[in-house]
Length: 250
Ligand code: ADP
Image (cartoon, rainbow, N blue to C red; front, side, top):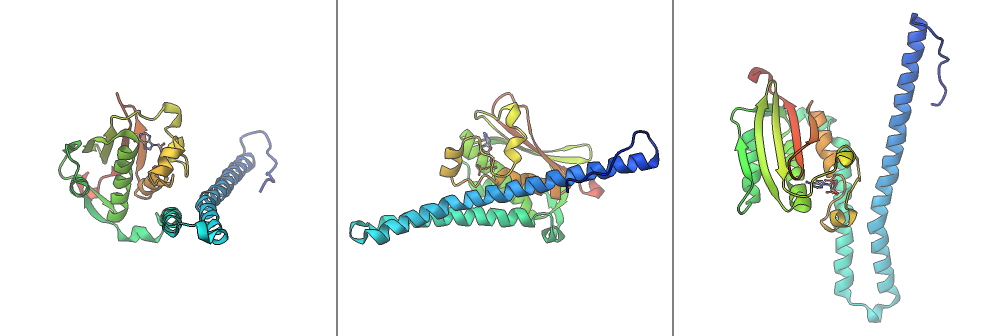
Protein backbone atom coordinates (compact mmCIF):
# COMPACT_ATOMS: atom_id res chain seq x y z
CA UNK A 1 0.00 0.00 0.00
CA UNK A 2 2.85 2.36 0.66
CA UNK A 3 3.83 2.73 -3.04
CA UNK A 4 2.86 6.11 -4.46
CA UNK A 5 2.26 7.31 -8.01
CA UNK A 6 5.08 9.74 -8.95
CA UNK A 7 3.59 13.24 -8.94
CA UNK A 8 4.55 15.80 -11.55
CA UNK A 9 4.12 19.52 -11.00
CA UNK A 10 1.40 21.37 -12.89
CA UNK A 11 -2.33 21.26 -13.41
CA UNK A 12 -2.70 18.95 -16.42
CA UNK A 13 -4.91 15.88 -16.30
CA UNK A 14 -2.07 13.45 -15.54
CA UNK A 15 -0.79 15.54 -12.64
CA UNK A 16 -4.30 15.80 -11.18
CA UNK A 17 -4.90 12.07 -11.60
CA UNK A 18 -1.66 11.24 -9.82
CA UNK A 19 -2.57 13.50 -6.91
CA UNK A 20 -6.06 12.00 -6.62
CA UNK A 21 -4.65 8.48 -6.73
CA UNK A 22 -2.17 9.30 -3.97
CA UNK A 23 -4.82 10.94 -1.80
CA UNK A 24 -6.98 7.84 -2.15
CA UNK A 25 -4.03 5.64 -1.20
CA UNK A 26 -3.40 7.83 1.87
CA UNK A 27 -7.03 7.52 2.93
CA UNK A 28 -6.98 3.75 2.44
CA UNK A 29 -3.80 3.45 4.42
CA UNK A 30 -5.28 5.42 7.33
CA UNK A 31 -8.45 3.29 7.22
CA UNK A 32 -6.42 0.08 7.34
CA UNK A 33 -4.38 1.43 10.26
CA UNK A 34 -7.60 2.36 12.14
CA UNK A 35 -9.05 -1.09 11.51
CA UNK A 36 -5.87 -2.72 12.77
CA UNK A 37 -5.92 -0.58 15.91
CA UNK A 38 -9.57 -1.51 16.46
CA UNK A 39 -8.85 -5.24 16.18
CA UNK A 40 -6.01 -4.86 18.66
CA UNK A 41 -8.13 -2.82 21.11
CA UNK A 42 -11.03 -5.28 20.84
CA UNK A 43 -8.72 -8.22 21.56
CA UNK A 44 -7.32 -6.43 24.56
CA UNK A 45 -10.81 -5.65 25.91
CA UNK A 46 -11.83 -9.31 25.51
CA UNK A 47 -8.66 -10.62 27.11
CA UNK A 48 -9.25 -8.81 30.40
CA UNK A 49 -12.39 -10.72 31.46
CA UNK A 50 -10.99 -13.96 30.04
CA UNK A 51 -7.87 -13.53 32.18
CA UNK A 52 -10.09 -12.89 35.22
CA UNK A 53 -12.11 -15.99 34.50
CA UNK A 54 -8.99 -18.11 34.13
CA UNK A 55 -7.31 -16.89 37.34
CA UNK A 56 -10.49 -17.45 39.28
CA UNK A 57 -11.04 -20.99 37.97
CA UNK A 58 -7.37 -21.99 38.27
CA UNK A 59 -7.36 -20.86 41.86
CA UNK A 60 -10.45 -22.92 42.60
CA UNK A 61 -8.98 -25.97 40.86
CA UNK A 62 -5.68 -25.73 42.73
CA UNK A 63 -7.12 -25.09 46.19
CA UNK A 64 -10.51 -26.81 46.17
CA UNK A 65 -10.65 -27.04 49.96
CA UNK A 66 -10.18 -23.31 50.56
CA UNK A 67 -12.63 -22.34 47.84
CA UNK A 68 -15.98 -20.75 48.44
CA UNK A 69 -17.80 -22.08 45.42
CA UNK A 70 -20.39 -19.30 45.54
CA UNK A 71 -17.71 -16.65 45.28
CA UNK A 72 -16.10 -18.41 42.33
CA UNK A 73 -19.38 -18.76 40.48
CA UNK A 74 -20.43 -15.16 41.16
CA UNK A 75 -17.13 -13.81 39.95
CA UNK A 76 -17.16 -16.09 36.88
CA UNK A 77 -20.66 -14.86 36.06
CA UNK A 78 -19.53 -11.23 36.25
CA UNK A 79 -16.70 -11.91 33.80
CA UNK A 80 -19.09 -13.81 31.53
CA UNK A 81 -21.56 -10.88 31.56
CA UNK A 82 -18.75 -8.56 30.58
CA UNK A 83 -17.64 -10.81 27.71
CA UNK A 84 -21.21 -11.06 26.52
CA UNK A 85 -21.80 -7.29 26.48
CA UNK A 86 -18.55 -6.63 24.60
CA UNK A 87 -19.28 -9.31 21.98
CA UNK A 88 -22.92 -8.15 21.61
CA UNK A 89 -21.81 -4.53 21.09
CA UNK A 90 -19.08 -5.56 18.63
CA UNK A 91 -21.62 -7.52 16.58
CA UNK A 92 -24.06 -4.62 16.62
CA UNK A 93 -21.33 -2.22 15.52
CA UNK A 94 -20.43 -4.52 12.62
CA UNK A 95 -24.07 -4.80 11.49
CA UNK A 96 -25.23 -1.17 11.60
CA UNK A 97 -25.56 0.23 8.13
CA UNK A 98 -25.40 -3.16 6.40
CA UNK A 99 -28.47 -5.39 5.94
CA UNK A 100 -30.26 -3.94 8.97
CA UNK A 101 -31.14 -0.70 7.17
CA UNK A 102 -33.73 -2.53 5.05
CA UNK A 103 -36.10 -2.32 8.04
CA UNK A 104 -36.49 1.48 7.72
CA UNK A 105 -39.92 2.93 8.41
CA UNK A 106 -41.39 6.38 9.16
CA UNK A 107 -40.71 7.18 12.81
CA UNK A 108 -42.27 9.95 14.86
CA UNK A 109 -39.32 11.09 16.98
CA UNK A 110 -41.48 12.63 19.73
CA UNK A 111 -43.43 9.42 20.11
CA UNK A 112 -40.28 7.25 20.17
CA UNK A 113 -38.64 9.57 22.72
CA UNK A 114 -41.72 9.76 24.97
CA UNK A 115 -42.00 5.95 24.97
CA UNK A 116 -38.35 5.54 25.95
CA UNK A 117 -38.63 8.11 28.75
CA UNK A 118 -41.83 6.46 30.06
CA UNK A 119 -40.17 3.06 30.00
CA UNK A 120 -37.39 4.37 32.21
CA UNK A 121 -39.85 5.76 34.77
CA UNK A 122 -37.64 8.68 35.88
CA UNK A 123 -38.72 9.96 39.31
CA UNK A 124 -38.65 13.76 39.30
CA UNK A 125 -37.57 13.36 35.72
CA UNK A 126 -35.84 15.47 33.11
CA UNK A 127 -37.32 18.52 31.40
CA UNK A 128 -38.98 17.17 28.25
CA UNK A 129 -39.90 19.27 25.20
CA UNK A 130 -41.17 17.31 22.22
CA UNK A 131 -42.22 19.09 19.04
CA UNK A 132 -44.98 17.30 17.16
CA UNK A 133 -44.84 15.95 13.61
CA UNK A 134 -41.10 15.43 13.49
CA UNK A 135 -40.91 12.30 11.35
CA UNK A 136 -37.74 10.65 10.06
CA UNK A 137 -37.10 7.45 8.14
CA UNK A 138 -35.20 5.00 10.27
CA UNK A 139 -34.75 1.66 11.93
CA UNK A 140 -36.72 1.91 15.17
CA UNK A 141 -34.57 -0.50 17.18
CA UNK A 142 -31.41 1.38 16.24
CA UNK A 143 -32.80 4.82 17.10
CA UNK A 144 -34.07 3.49 20.45
CA UNK A 145 -30.60 2.13 21.12
CA UNK A 146 -28.96 5.45 20.19
CA UNK A 147 -31.24 7.41 22.53
CA UNK A 148 -30.83 4.73 25.21
CA UNK A 149 -27.04 5.04 25.08
CA UNK A 150 -27.23 8.82 25.60
CA UNK A 151 -29.69 8.49 28.49
CA UNK A 152 -27.61 5.70 30.10
CA UNK A 153 -24.48 7.84 29.86
CA UNK A 154 -26.17 10.84 31.50
CA UNK A 155 -27.20 8.51 34.35
CA UNK A 156 -23.74 6.96 34.60
CA UNK A 157 -21.48 9.97 34.27
CA UNK A 158 -23.59 13.00 35.16
CA UNK A 159 -26.00 11.90 37.87
CA UNK A 160 -29.00 11.93 35.55
CA UNK A 161 -30.64 13.41 32.47
CA UNK A 162 -31.47 17.11 32.76
CA UNK A 163 -33.39 17.67 29.52
CA UNK A 164 -34.56 15.86 26.40
CA UNK A 165 -35.80 17.82 23.39
CA UNK A 166 -37.15 17.01 19.94
CA UNK A 167 -37.32 19.91 17.48
CA UNK A 168 -37.18 20.79 13.77
CA UNK A 169 -34.48 22.89 12.20
CA UNK A 170 -35.07 23.55 8.52
CA UNK A 171 -34.99 20.18 6.73
CA UNK A 172 -33.64 18.42 9.82
CA UNK A 173 -34.94 16.82 12.96
CA UNK A 174 -33.01 17.49 16.18
CA UNK A 175 -32.94 15.26 19.24
CA UNK A 176 -31.00 16.69 22.19
CA UNK A 177 -30.03 15.03 25.48
CA UNK A 178 -28.47 17.27 28.14
CA UNK A 179 -27.22 16.72 31.63
CA UNK A 180 -25.90 18.82 34.54
CA UNK A 181 -22.76 16.78 35.19
CA UNK A 182 -19.11 17.73 34.78
CA UNK A 183 -19.40 17.96 30.98
CA UNK A 184 -16.84 16.86 28.40
CA UNK A 185 -13.80 19.04 27.71
CA UNK A 186 -13.53 20.57 24.26
CA UNK A 187 -10.45 18.47 23.39
CA UNK A 188 -12.27 15.19 24.24
CA UNK A 189 -15.45 15.88 22.27
CA UNK A 190 -14.42 13.93 19.16
CA UNK A 191 -12.31 11.34 20.96
CA UNK A 192 -15.22 10.01 23.07
CA UNK A 193 -16.90 8.77 19.86
CA UNK A 194 -13.94 6.51 19.06
CA UNK A 195 -14.24 2.85 19.92
CA UNK A 196 -13.13 1.95 23.47
CA UNK A 197 -12.33 5.53 24.48
CA UNK A 198 -13.14 6.14 28.13
CA UNK A 199 -12.38 9.33 30.00
CA UNK A 200 -12.81 7.52 33.31
CA UNK A 201 -12.15 3.85 32.73
CA UNK A 202 -12.77 2.59 36.29
CA UNK A 203 -16.18 4.23 36.41
CA UNK A 204 -17.12 3.06 32.93
CA UNK A 205 -16.16 -0.59 33.53
CA UNK A 206 -17.71 -0.57 37.00
CA UNK A 207 -21.00 0.59 35.50
CA UNK A 208 -20.86 -2.19 32.89
CA UNK A 209 -19.79 0.15 30.07
CA UNK A 210 -18.06 -1.46 27.10
CA UNK A 211 -16.57 1.78 25.79
CA UNK A 212 -18.55 1.26 22.56
CA UNK A 213 -21.78 3.13 23.42
CA UNK A 214 -20.99 6.43 21.72
CA UNK A 215 -19.24 4.74 18.77
CA UNK A 216 -22.44 2.73 18.22
CA UNK A 217 -24.61 5.84 18.64
CA UNK A 218 -22.61 7.79 16.05
CA UNK A 219 -22.50 4.86 13.61
CA UNK A 220 -26.32 4.66 13.82
CA UNK A 221 -26.61 8.41 13.22
CA UNK A 222 -24.39 8.16 10.12
CA UNK A 223 -26.26 5.11 8.79
CA UNK A 224 -29.41 7.29 8.92
CA UNK A 225 -27.73 10.11 6.97
CA UNK A 226 -27.35 12.20 10.12
CA UNK A 227 -24.76 13.40 12.63
CA UNK A 228 -24.21 13.13 16.38
CA UNK A 229 -22.17 15.82 18.12
CA UNK A 230 -21.44 17.29 21.51
CA UNK A 231 -22.32 20.97 21.70
CA UNK A 232 -21.40 23.70 24.12
CA UNK A 233 -23.67 23.87 27.12
CA UNK A 234 -23.64 26.25 30.08
CA UNK A 235 -23.29 23.20 32.31
CA UNK A 236 -22.80 19.48 31.71
CA UNK A 237 -22.78 17.66 28.38
CA UNK A 238 -25.21 18.26 25.52
CA UNK A 239 -25.51 15.62 22.77
CA UNK A 240 -27.26 16.65 19.57
CA UNK A 241 -28.54 14.15 17.02
CA UNK A 242 -29.43 15.69 13.64
CA UNK A 243 -31.38 13.57 11.13
CA UNK A 244 -32.91 14.46 7.76
CA UNK A 245 -36.72 14.86 8.01
CA UNK A 246 -38.80 12.47 5.96
CA UNK A 247 -39.28 13.95 2.45
CA UNK A 248 -42.99 14.85 2.67
CA UNK A 249 -42.28 16.85 5.85
CA UNK A 250 -39.85 19.27 4.30
P1 ADP B 1 -18.86 3.63 28.05
O1 ADP B 1 -19.96 4.41 28.70
O2 ADP B 1 -19.23 2.21 27.83
O3 ADP B 1 -17.53 3.82 28.68
P2 ADP B 1 -19.29 5.37 25.75
O4 ADP B 1 -18.78 5.25 24.37
O5 ADP B 1 -20.78 5.39 25.94
O6 ADP B 1 -18.63 4.17 26.56
O7 ADP B 1 -18.69 6.68 26.41
C1 ADP B 1 -17.31 6.95 26.29
C2 ADP B 1 -16.82 7.81 27.45
O8 ADP B 1 -17.35 9.15 27.32
C3 ADP B 1 -17.29 7.35 28.82
O9 ADP B 1 -16.45 6.35 29.32
C4 ADP B 1 -17.25 8.64 29.61
O10 ADP B 1 -15.95 8.85 30.10
C5 ADP B 1 -17.56 9.74 28.59
N1 ADP B 1 -18.97 10.21 28.65
C6 ADP B 1 -20.01 9.72 27.94
N2 ADP B 1 -21.16 10.40 28.22
C7 ADP B 1 -20.83 11.34 29.13
C8 ADP B 1 -21.58 12.37 29.83
N3 ADP B 1 -22.90 12.53 29.64
N4 ADP B 1 -20.89 13.17 30.70
C9 ADP B 1 -19.56 13.00 30.89
N5 ADP B 1 -18.81 12.05 30.28
C10 ADP B 1 -19.43 11.23 29.41
